[in-house]
Image 1 (tube, helix red, strand yellow):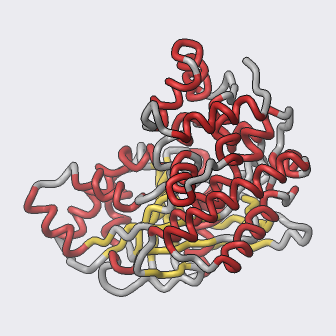
Image 2 (cartoon, one colour):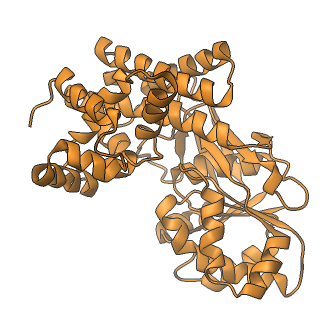
Image 3 (cartoon, one colour):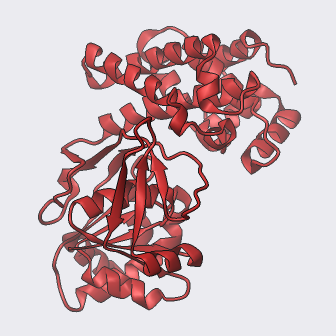
Length: 385
């Protein structure tokens, strides 16, 4: 069996590539990093190390690589022969790879109408649907009808922490032992790919929002609160009692919103929260607060990890989300001269003030009670400019 995976970075190799290998696929990685592609073709294997006290290792074999800039025709040929296509390139890159994917699928249809599923394994809601939209921008109306019949774009929720790292072997990647890969089976064309590690569900949205509002929301606390308190690493921030208090409170608030919206079992969800907090305390996978906190404008968006659960909590309970509000306040005040979004955000605040800036990036109305809660949060965590 053959897999084509766009994105030969740490997440692609350490998470998706490892599971594809264990499922019996030969994986062709597609990337623009020529050094990594040459290494993949030269060694045809790499090691994935579990980041814990045991440091267990898996050797991933049956791999190769294609530089999509230098050899796009080879990518087209690989898609023609593929049994599955996956991505881990980042939400903003899906548009960039869409035209090449469209060419590959178009060429594939010339010789076969064998179903193919394309799964975007991105840290976003509706990644595969977004990829499909971008691919379809390059098709005629007639082609779109045929593509809809043959090619599936099932959305997925993925979760595995892959810390920032530098290894002597550039292909080796360290990952946390825990992972989750949930795929919406109703959008699958043909037979479901048999990959141990994938959980197929009929309705993906509860799982996407559970992950987004627990893992991503939780990670934001030691990133933004931690940076304000002077910490540079996530696991260091997590050892602070104040950070512990805020993350536990924030995840109780987001958890209440999830439980009331989707009917999650309260005890089971609490166990999920406890597991997530424990993961952030693992010193073997700790990231820099600046890497986790990067892109604050996107993370303060209306449907992202902070504003959405805070708004839901307020709407469903009628109470202010005190701990989420503090985290939103810390995200507003986040400063990093090496982060373009952080620089832009602080410029907006200098020109418009906190309240109008929050309205602008979050989509909240001026009279939304969450804005007042966040401004109180600014005072509570004694942030100063």
